[in-house]
Length: 368
Image (tube, rainbow, N blue to C red; front, side, top):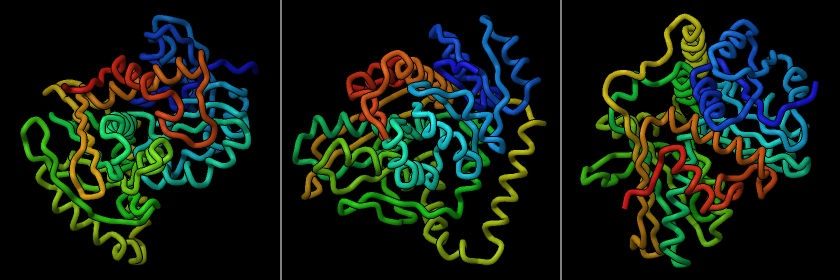
């Protein structure tokens, strides 16, 4: 079949549907792809414009490959990505397409940059992993802070925080991904290289309040040193756990020992499977209740540990932001292409100033 410019794989899922709606709002006509033809038709009939549908399944990679062409855009929202994400990546590489996904899983992010990046560069494909609230805002905030700090900056810390009852909004895919990564190794960027680490915490001040963050592996560790050659250290922290962050840090430091216990990984996979199976029975995450807002802060430091600059970004619901940001990136990439090949970060792909505008359109702006 003739491939359209934008394909949304996993269109009937929670994040996929948000992305499709945002694309339609921008005037795009993406192909809706997924494994259930009836659900795809139901989604298509609920939209104000007529969109094509295509059955595609990770267990039948050819069904994905036939949807893509060189320069086309594939947006994948099919997670957990460490288990189901690779067929879409391989299809994009084979086609020389532009690939975006919504993962927040450190293991998968690392796999994209280290395993698939060289093959993508050779085929002319571009891989943009973790292109949502995880972890575009941190790449943006850190790049702005580093631009303000100047060449003396050698370290940048990023913190992600939310306010409101985010647990009511979390999708089943997000929960399954979180369970699946419990025993996975984390990493940081220190002394100019990727290193394994577990359980690092630190305190940020957000809106005048002390907020704890727990270190995680993210795309910032790979992307930022490529656009800022003087960087020797990149740290990324999630502050979604509030007062439980310290306890989570202790547990995180124990994961290398727990992971070697026979059956531990099988147990977490079984829990993730149960969460995934419940997705077809349970209602979609609630958008009611208290308003959810998000804050992302980045701080740049010199060799002596002196803070040189800080940038704080404020936005709304992380899921809504992710859908709108993917739509902006998909439309922009389809119309203009991207400026880099291989596995790249958002600043490499679109440029810093364009990314500022795109994030603002999606609802994330710098707090002055």
